[in-house]
Image (tube, rainbow, N blue to C red; front, side):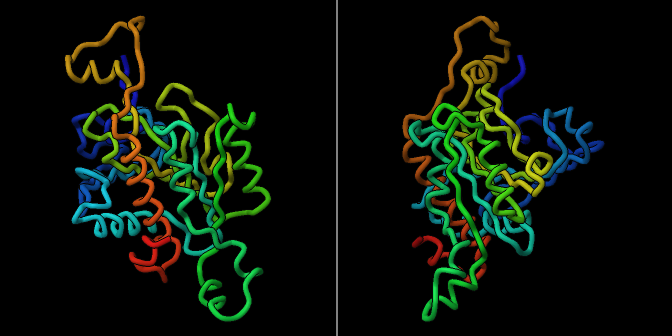
Length: 283
């Protein structure tokens, strides 16, 4: 039985050393950051991931009450900045279902991101000069197929065709294999994302290949597959025909709220260099 996880770090398993076609480096201060680079799709087959760069940011808790909350947010912002083009509009896409808490990370985060694409035309005088200096950002909460009747990729592709952003940041809830990573880990990558893949509900891919612009995926694990947990505890495969379910922490409401707050704050700081941590946190 293959483990079910969206995290490149877990796909690598215990061996996180660099090898042919896959390079791994560990660094960071507020976070423990594992930086994995996959040279080609063929190399990525070993870990079930396409070509790209995958950052895993690990901590004990993504809590706004942590003594290192500001340091974590600033480090997140700095790492995200490295994925972004220097200029041009950026589309923020909050993926997932706001009515289902473990799947609400995308919509909750997108709702806290500052949308500025319209400001240059709408504002005159006063604070308008400062607001016009902010980077153009548009925000979309796409919903899910069952709510809209449209694939998320179809909606985002249509928006990209009309607005022509320089890049897309897609935020989504992920699945992991280790219980300790639930609500405590952030993954960023430039290879795009297939919404729902971690819960065996794979939808159309969002990537530079499908949208024509760079796609940076940001996510936090909010669920874990019961079979995967059982295998990690017992070391044995679970029969495929045995009952299975997705498990989420009982304090998932708090975890989603804190994770969405940190990620949105980091995104705002990465996109608008004029904003301080205090400015971004107050939005």
